[in-house]
Image 1: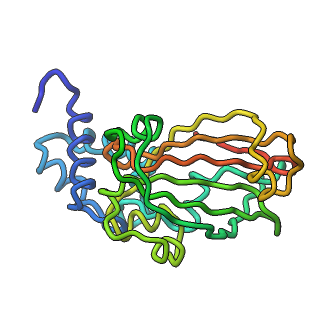
Image 2: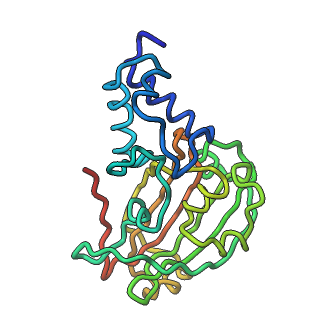
Image 3: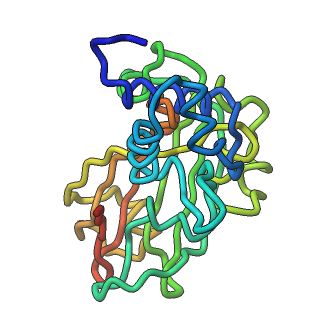
Length: 237
């Protein structure tokens, strides 16, 4: 091991690399702490420090009496990434209305956000999230086509779970971190119409880049949210 890097960080990096490579698929348990300590020739306390951080980041989950597991994107886990709620903080699962799906080429902004070459092949999807029986957020997603071979509109629209569950279950890509920028802005007229806003009425604009367990950017998402009766909640312990 590299003596200049703390052992627990090296162990953490090794576990992340093994998860990203599919050695530990989503929902499967990690080996026991003693077995990991033997594998990495370190103390059990070092293993615990490495895995504690991954649990806090949502890469791993601990189940009382069962062990430590690679986290899965369940419907409940949606709220780690979906932050629109009523002002009192009450969470509601959105109803997703699929709009369209297309193949595109990366422009400079998309290429920079996703770490791609200009004109790299992209997949673009759009959907409308409904809360409380009305449109709440219009989202446009761009995905590197090479990471999602065979993905088309039918598979995207017909997924049984969330978008991130689709990435994980069918393509082995686990989203564990998002970077977001938020600002108030005036949406285009077509967006305002979708959200039931008057032309010129402001909305919340959200730019998000989602990262896989190994830190690689895997999705660029631009969203317009109607927050007249909703609030954006993002809380981390």
